[in-house]
Image (cartoon, rainbow, N blue to C red; front, side, top):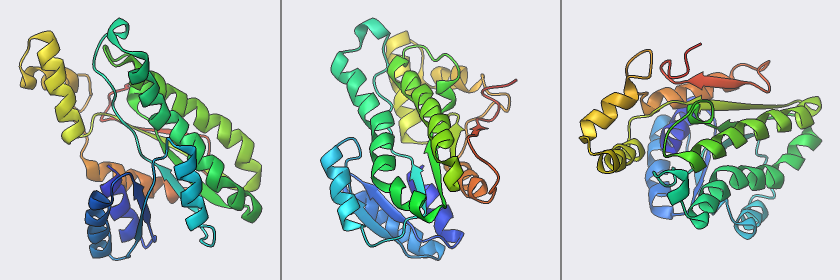
Amino acid sequence: MGRNISRHLAAAGIRVLMTGRNLGPLHETAALVAAAGTPGRVATVDQSDPASVAALADVLVDEEISILINNAGIPGPVAPLWEIEPAEWDEVFDVNVRGIYLICRAFLLPRIERRRGDVINLASVSGKRPLARRTPYCASKMAVLGLTTTLAAEVGEFGIAVNSLSPGPVNGPRMDRNFVMEAVRTGVTEQQAREAFTSRALLRRMLEEDEVGQAVVAILRMPGLHAADIDLSAGMVGR
């Protein structure tokens, strides 16, 4: 998703700084971003580590960063709560929630001083509906929703728009992994696990990564949008 978000931002004329733990995938993404029309930069960071985030902030001290897209996340274990180890729980929250806090803490102040900017936090429909055997992931994404609305209340007066985007199931390696693990645990085939999951969506399908990138750009083009969560789930959370 991060790769496709970066590509769509570049196509919209936005210069993108792509961050992650490993340079290899970042350079691959940078090539796609450049091909989309606006060359970007790459930098390594472990957003769950305060020292790593502080080092990134030092490197970028002279840059004007106007948009934060907090997309990094991990799925965590697929198991009932009583089988999940504390270290597994903590890892999910360290990346999915603490990472957003650390990035915003490191990069928000210049925006407050300039009285403009955008923050988009990637949440999930899993933060708004039950998903068996995914307790730490669901809890972390619900925490992202709470972090987003509270931060929006704190910085709105400074002209900084803070919103979240909650994708539903997105085609890709992460969902493939989840279906394999679900199949092993429940004794069904991988295809049956996939069909059981997608049947919950009113459109009866998963999202494509491009749709997430398009939604991020659309949020940025709605200047009055603030403290909102955009449900992008093919009807996974039907009301």
